[in-house]
Length: 451
Image 1 (cartoon, rainbow, N blue to C red):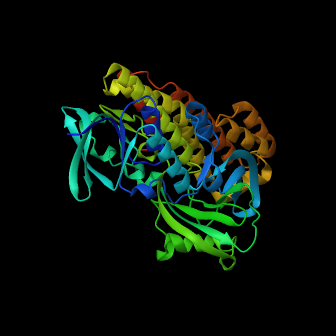
Image 2: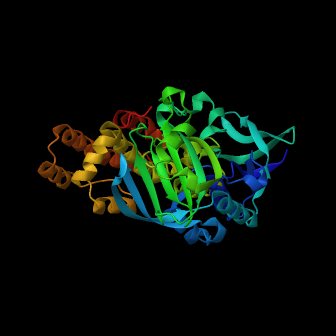
């Protein structure tokens, strides 16, 4: 039976960076992806990527920033709007709109240059076990069931969680590894080419609209001077109204903002995205979860590209540490949990708490906060530059007391800020080993009850 040092299931951003990190140290890595080789990396989404992950890849591996055909447009601003485009706030948020396929294919070539083998058209069907240890996978390729053994298996298969679903129940430590409809949004988007230049140069805009229940929203992202990436998200636990499709809702919300008579549709598609903090533990005996397979998506913005890249790097680091010991038990991979819970885990958990406040407000309440400047543009800039949602409690409350006549919002905002600060502290105090995990988990369930 063939053998690798590491198997990566899925060649998207988290998987390919896991492979690069491990292969760069001289180990044999095999990526298995159900897509054909030339389509690996393609995904229908907003295509936004902040600067943090590309900076990391440049620093650690010399991987150049997105450019040329990979970069339809740089990003300079993020705008939040509620109910209409006239009621909005904008913050500096440097980053990129990337062509997912072109950028993903370049990262695959980097992985190959470091010795990674990429097998497209490979559908993983089962795991290979030795006792309670995962030691490989069984996969279909060209109509034939094949087996491949390894020291470790990395699940980078996205929302579906191909490997995650095959983990035995007794190894889950009380963690629920399902993603409920309450914590999932459906998406539909189109890439459109306009007759003339648009007004969203270097900008991405999120619109909380009365027709879309929060946490759903509409988006309008630059995709070059004459192209836009426009789409909607819809909470999966809420049925579409009047038997409409998500595509119909998309047109109802966005056609008044971007006239379909003025553009040509270049591409369209959709999917499902988890909008909850990462799973409480992401490691098993011989396996790790990365990217969307581990729920590395910001619950407020649904941005997962950057967190996926970072989680892939962190997983690769943990595997390299385990390689030195030649032991791949849960405890040997635990450092990955610890690092993920600092970022993106803590940030995403705080974002989840903030999202509950936004859901409670609704678009009209959100508009009220914007109009009264309860949240200033300077504070938005600080949030998106530092990736830290911790707001100074008393300064914020004093400001609200001076300007806010609606006591219910004041009380809920006070509660939310306290929860955000406590959540940040709890995730940063993630246990150093599995021994103290259950106590941490029980407190998390009380503090952030998303499951």
